[in-house]
Length: 84
Image (cartoon, rainbow, N blue to C red; front, side, top):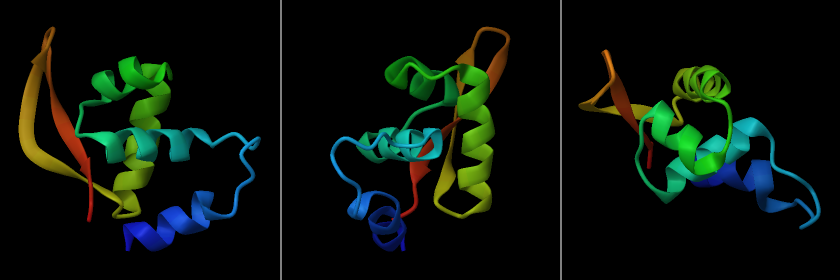
């Protein structure tokens, strides 16, 4: 399922075409699991934008919470991964 979605998103793109924020975040999670804060740090995308897009990807059933939570400051964050 993820391969089909990914092919639709980036399969036919020209190399000069930028990825959308949703695509960038999905690509970052495809490289490895992470919290919203970790994905934000790795990608350079604002944390609020990452969180919004993680919610969208989760509703689309393209990512899931691993069940692991990481303590960050005063709260815990889910660790996300791509659904394979």
